[in-house]
Image (cartoon, rainbow, N blue to C red; front, side):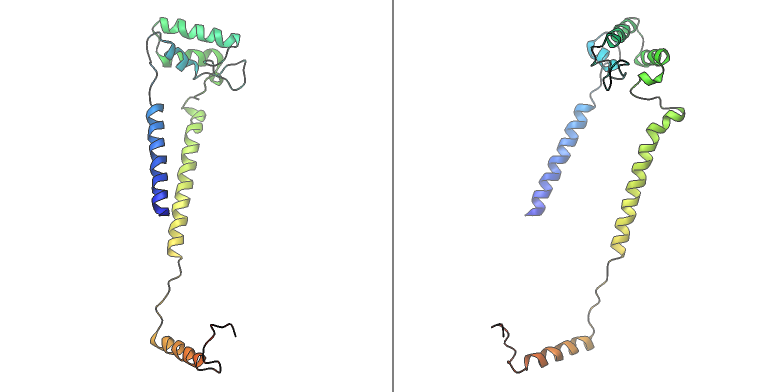
Length: 168
């Protein structure tokens, strides 16, 4: 019964992950003048005046100016990469919430993946070792069985007749 309950829990967890991935994979527009595109670009830049807020969410004056500049560049037909590059050049890459993937900054992308792979490899090796380190229980030999039977027979033929059910 417990196995069925666990199976349902895993199935529900899997369904939640699939739904989350499907909703999260919806892409914002990459061209045009829509507010969705404006806020998608603003969400990739941090507000230089606020702590922990993106340009999309901040109401600080600099964030409002940056959104206006994003809108102006969108009206000029610039791509998302060009707009982000403009802000990276103007304010340095510290304004970008997604660091560049080249050079030393590329380590931000590589190190977590490598650490995850090392951790999974370590777990696999540990589980394999546990499986091989199990103590093998050998079948008793004929001699061992005879000794046990003899010991039980001697115990059963004792003074109390082998009846230990009354707690004596």
